[in-house]
Image 1 (cartoon, rainbow, N blue to C red):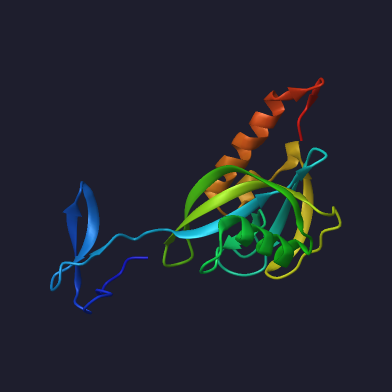
Image 2: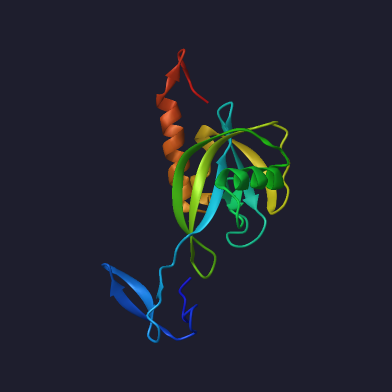
Length: 177
């Protein structure tokens, strides 16, 4: 999203090069719009060699697959946001969560920048149900993950790297899950 007016004085913003980057600066008071990202969280649920994906029920990317997750609310810490989103979208709690990476994407028609903290999640139950803004849930075998149908490209990158990593990590002769 690109701001057009100053949040301090209401003056019109103009594009300037500042610190080597194009930024929007107020012509009247000098305030700079940095376009900081909106925080979000996502859950990679990988159990018994299968990845859990949900089909998005609404825009943006309605009908695309996605990992469970969503925006972090005001005064909410990332792990609390993750727990809330997993409960809202899957109907289960989080038994364990481990941070595995971050993703930067654009969200929606205005292109809001989103910074997503992505966690490997072990749910409290495998009996998940589609809820909130998820139309359906499906477990995908590793070889059948529909990467080209997943909503956010950078999330795809983090999921791929994570699955490659656990494929290389052996414990007792078996790949860690």
